[in-house]
Structure formats: C-alpha cells, structure tokens
Image: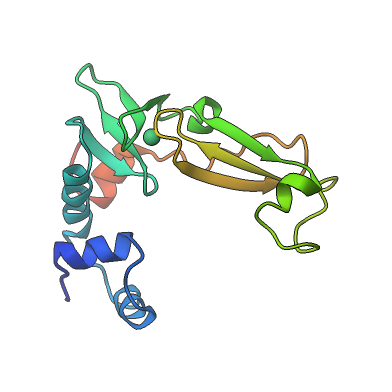
Length: 162
Ligand SMILES: [Zn+2]
C-alpha cells in the first residue's frame, strides 16, 4: 500500500497536484493513517488550539471545545455554533437574483434565469472567505450539506472512540 507524505497531502488538499498525480492517488487504496495525517496537517494550519475532529471543507472544521461542545469553526477563528445545526444560517449571505448580479460572474446569456434559479454565496463573518455556494430556485430552503455522525465515524471507520 502506498503512503503519502504530508507535502503530497497538502498539495492534494490545495488542488496543486497535476491531473495525473491526482488520478494516481484517487485510483489506489487510501493509506490507513491518511485521516490522522490529514488532521495533523489541518491542525498545524490553524491559529487556534481546539482539537479538530473533522474537516468539512477548506476553511471549516468541526472542533472539540474545552467544555465538550462540538462546533463548526473557520480557520480564522470564527465559530458558527453546534455542528448539528446548519452553519450557513450563521454566515453572511449574498444572493445573486438578478441579471445584473449574475452578470458579475457569468458571461452574458450564460447564467440561469433568475426567475427560476438564484445563486447564494455564503461568507464567513470573521474573514469574509467565500465558504459555499448553492444554485437553487428562489425561496428554496437553505441546504444543509452534511451532518456527520461523529461517534459512528470514529468508532466504526477509525476504530477509536471519541
Ligand atoms: Zn473565517
């Protein structure tokens, strides 16, 4: 089984691998300690010390607070609250729901009809990083992308109790 060093994992996460390198990694079995190596990499990147339990995306992590709470936290330090709640409800949102706002990012005639589909952009209130986007019909509820079962993930997939 191939194992990868932390620099390769960093390049994987940052999207800096060539298509060939990426395909080579994706087509093989993951090394057994990949998750732990990746957690170490993420922990070393952030300026705070709470333990990362699970990275959600390049800026957001589920972390363990000293009081036992598990919250979604941005790499800038902003906390979005309990991980079982949708962090997007605590984000800054910009809605592109007009020709004018959609044309800021799409060429003319290349965007959806805002009567049928809008673009929501979710930003961190702490650092204003763009965290997520979603294309939805106007009035559609905000999507809750992912609510992991941390206990089961750690116990059944990683063989370790939380
Ligand atoms: Zn932030």
